[in-house]
Image 1 (cartoon, rainbow, N blue to C red):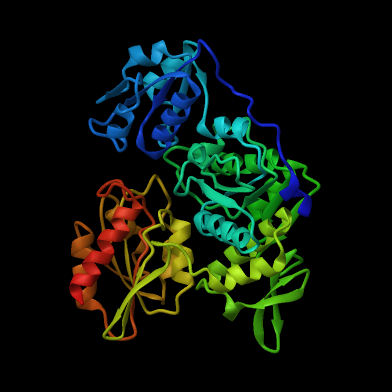
Image 2: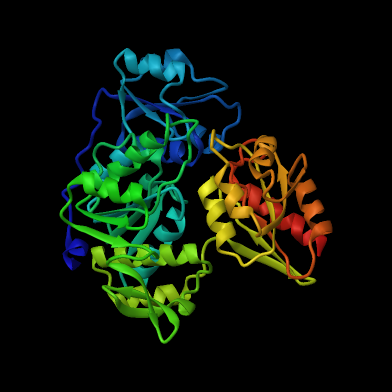
Length: 456
């Protein structure tokens, strides 16, 4: 499979040309990157945003000849456009957007613009949880092998800002919102890590959400699938791909899995031991699955095994993802603010020995919190709940653990500081989005760390 790294696409086929006019709907990182790309390409464009002062406003206004309208989507400006590039965070059912599309405006995405411009091979990663960790880890594996790789997409740098003629490999994290608007991307390798309920405020149900994730298998030449996840297995089967690598921590035949050697757990390829689990720098059993996924993706791309194993020994994870931030008086504090859905929080709880004081809450996105009940029973000694959907969380956890309602994260941290005893782990793993009280999960995690530091 090493030929993947030698593959080069033709690229440079522009989807847009003279006479096309693009309305970029929504600023922030993605919208701003699209404006810069279109401006450089000489495509007439403008930006609209519902917010009065959206992120990236100052830089957008600095682009000569690019009008920027805020405080509403401006139906007249959407009607002006021949194409709409809609931020992944904005639903296509928004009335002004829907009306413009019905009048004949074409939908274009930053992912498809990237796909038309890129010439190096692409690895794409999606899933409900672990995407950022696996994407970054694969890029680290490539770097250890001396391969110039760039990682981004839903993680960190928008795809259009990644484009570089000297890049040899792109590793992209893709959300369900990005996948449902992608038509041109053809990754050499596509991995689906797992599927659990998320974004059900945007997707009609779990089946629809899973189908969108499964599009990555249909688009990719080589598929990497979580063999432990029945939904992912079914999606891989439906894709009809003859090139599928599987990974998982469960029993059964897997290309990349676990084995026992002299009573110790090892990561293995075709049941041949590769590295002791204790040597993997990432902590928690769920991160063993992430490590196996990265090994499988690297195998499909032809990254040398020695480089992959060295990266596993060195990569300690990303900020806001099971990040140990303090240990004081026998109490460990962990920042898992990136846990914006139920599946991520269940994995975090299962990965810790306990007893746990859980801090959770925020905007639930229509999720079913019921799986938290079984995960918390006999392991979470108390759940301190905050934010918009704290009452729904309390209902789901009733009978599994003691619950305490607070208004915000500051109150929750203060309450945890009073309750925690030596041997406890205080875990911020919200199971919810942050947008009810914060700009994003990073701001929530930074605030948590500052609050914890103030207790020390």
